[in-house]
Length: 361
Length: 161
Image (tube, rainbow over all chains, first blue to last red; front, top):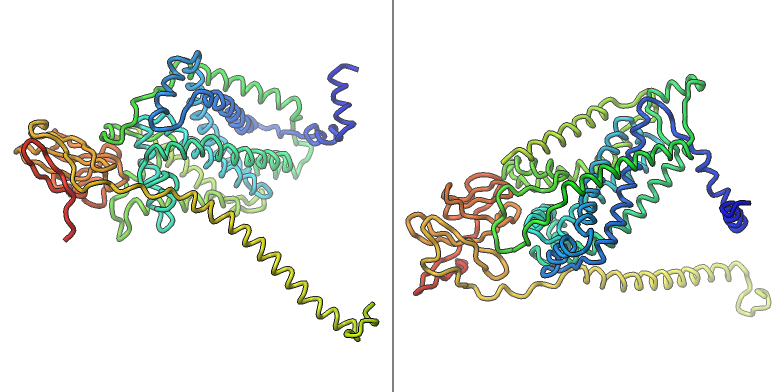
């Protein structure tokens, strides 16, 4: 027996290893012309792992605190060997991960994979997307530069607009009335402890559900394959799909490495609470559509403050987004067209507003 | 044995007496658990709310020196732990106001080309009295009193009427 086999049989004797991995062996992936969209979740997971690894590396030198944070990132980027690369990879991978998470969500929407029985997979996925944006928001402040300072000021102020609970939430987030070093300390804690813990739990739940429920088939195909089972095409997950997925990861790694090396991430200017916000200040691209919307809402709509209205509207949309599967039909032959319409609208709105926000002065 | 107990003749009586006793223990235990949970949760909740920052200090600060600002320019000064904006208008007058935008609290600046106060974050504009005149700001900037005493420009909070 080879040593590897020995180890396996040893584990199998102890706790029934083979039974444990048996479901993975049986796992299949449906094959059709849209199968490549199935790679996106895996790529997002891969980038998440990169975030964890590069995040741990950054933790070795980063120091939270208003007097040290900027300097420590500067130190990482100028003194520590390959520090610039590690930080650049962390920043780029964060952005790519948010992009692939959004792409994954829209692919699930358009392929209608959120339908019964996968409601909980959808909910955990949307919550993960919100968490990922929370990672982006909290991590953005950590270098303590001017852009980050004002982005955090505006972002937390937006939270403060929510009626009743807003103000206490804002103070909780900021660690006081204003954005100060106390905010940095809190955001650091959220970014490296609270959010990773929650995200790990949710990722495990998400994967468990995907494993348990199998991979969804687009409704049209589901109808065809149910009527004519011989038309069904599928691929084994291990090793066939997994190897293809790993090729996708390799491509993602290549893109990431190229971006990080060719366009190293900037550090900017150290934050100073007593300077004006610089002209042309904008949030990160994934918050741009909300930023631009808030900019366009007039100060007063009827008797409500424009911002309060904007924040409540986004909150409501977020909540409905989580509950979306419950509006869908159980029957694959009778899926709701308006949900697809809504998805097209949401995508167009987000893309349009982002481009508008990017170009607007 | 129930029958040998002198005070208990019917076993059913004993049972009915036991039920409130069990209930009593349940309430005692449940209440104890709730009290324990509260004893943990309350301090944690209080811990999460940061202590109030100490007072802003005095109501009056030196915002700048005479001659520091050219006509039609402005500067940010520290007013306690918040930023303030001192402006010298084109006619040479001094004006002071809070520099925290009433929209989403970015720090505003004086634009000499517009002769207005401008917030870079969401393109809000105020006139030289701090009144919101365009863009998203919902309220005017808080105005401060300016006094020139010798070489120093003092700024103080307006007294509430």
